[in-house]
Length: 366
Image 1 (cartoon, rainbow, N blue to C red):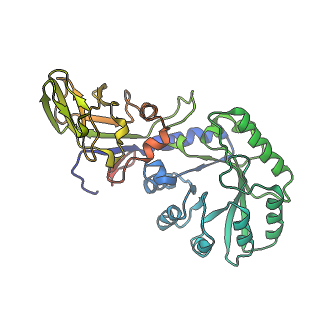
Image 2 (tube, rainbow, N blue to C red):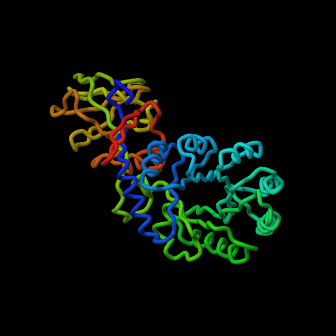
């Protein structure tokens, strides 16, 4: 157990993450859910999430970076790890040595892979309209697949695409799905894994898709969504601190940098040991925190290490303060305040905020 002295922490309920996984797995039936643990498991802690899932028997995960894959490989030699993002041709030897599954993401890289002498496992990504990563021309895709046929050092394990609008535009989602379906129909041969759905598509559309073997689930694991009606979700992270200092100010007195807040009357304020270096960015000014199931406003500029709130007489030094993930101030409310999505809120919680892991069989701190 690592010691920490500031009372700011992110509590993560690992059993909630696994409960969300089980619900999604039940929803998709005999298809396999791939837990996406990129970006430090969306800020929740990739090592701890993977370790917990490993104890539950899960052996397949997806990340975005080769660095993320290698960190997981150091802890678990017998799991499959898919890197969904870009890697360099100069890293193919590292990928082969560490038995990492990577993504062939464009025509140039496909040509390099088909001529490699390394023992490689890979998925091919197809661009069906998002215009990010993926082989765009069907002829190039089929040419690559034909060229690697019979090369025993090259194992073509999967093919996938990525939807741009699963949570927002049904017509464009179906357009992409139709394009991918046509490609699959005319493939020279199919790999053992075919996956298209992200979190939103998994819950809204996957039941209609009859040719896939897997789904990729990220934000749903952590109890968050951009869709409505998913009441089964259990948000897994709650960022907390404590009231450390209380003072009174009078009318005409100012608060924090740039004196953006002026008291109109006698007021009671509290200083919290959390700031923008922890992920509570300055744009949260005029937002709220939660104390004893009640909202209290953030006043003045948020500092690098401290935040100031206006309180009433019921608040005392030592009281718990919920920054995100509470019942009154939840993660979605913070995202709406910042004009962003809940993904960004949880992934921007800084590394200097200790994660405290709670579950029925885990109680640890890092």
